[in-house]
Image (cartoon, rainbow, N blue to C red; front, top):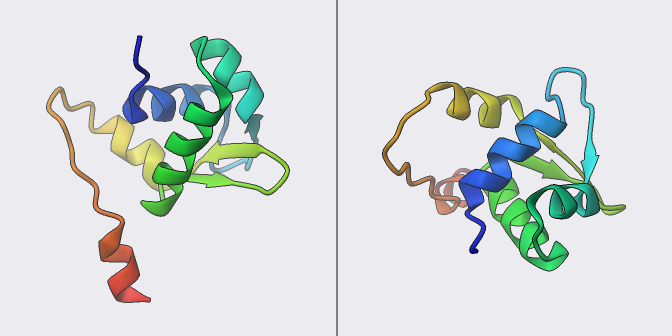
Length: 90
């Protein structure tokens, strides 16, 4: 089974909290999703590039407020978030 970035974001939002800055580990997410840690880490870095997650050097991760708000939209269709827009603003 292939894990999607949305699935990772959804599980990250359950396992962490943006406001309280509570984190989870990449290992914990991988175990919960029964997925490879490297695949989870790659998805997290993609989410981070879009300001939907924060990942620390020691392997901790948390959802951002933006990530929580995106999930609250509860849309069934695919949403495309382009990280290059963030690069243009820097």
